[in-house]
Image (tube, rainbow, N blue to C red):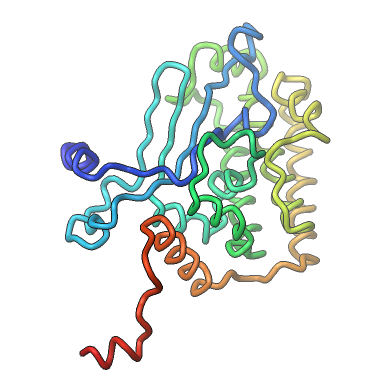
Length: 272
């Protein structure tokens, strides 16, 4: 922890993409003041940042303690990812980070030139196998939480009361179904719908406990099968191209630092 604080103090971060995530970005936010029972949502923020160029050219960059910063202050929850960590997870089609690249424009607080390049080229990360595995994996984790029957450290009193009343965490249930539907849509259309409109009311009805646990489990089973079918019929490539992803990362860093194109391998060999 000491290293991380010192590290972040020495190297100031530059945000290339900053905005909302979670329930606000998904159009499923229930404010605490609006509902005494189901108003459990925080205001969630997400950022992708770079450090100054001298950080990447120094030994300090070997220390990975500052790649992820997670801060919670009252009802505000902020997660920040260093660009290399973000790209690593995006290449795996991590649902939480990938969905951030498909936000509505008004849900971004800041977009730098590099951030705009990232949004314009977000499709380079898409890979059918990784989408299926990542979205199914995250959804299955939510499904397990529904049946474990124990309180978690992230739960406040309201959320614990929901579990007591309904026998499961209704917020996790809504997240479970949303993740599966987003994975299906992404495999089918090549686009991820972060901001829910067509099924917003349905997802909110799950979130406010209008279904039993067995009904939610039955829904999930059907959605898992649809996800497998979407994978079998997708037109997306099975794997993404790591060289293309690396090239995008280099281009974004060059743009942020106003750098000229890097020398070719031939020039480097001659220089040696």
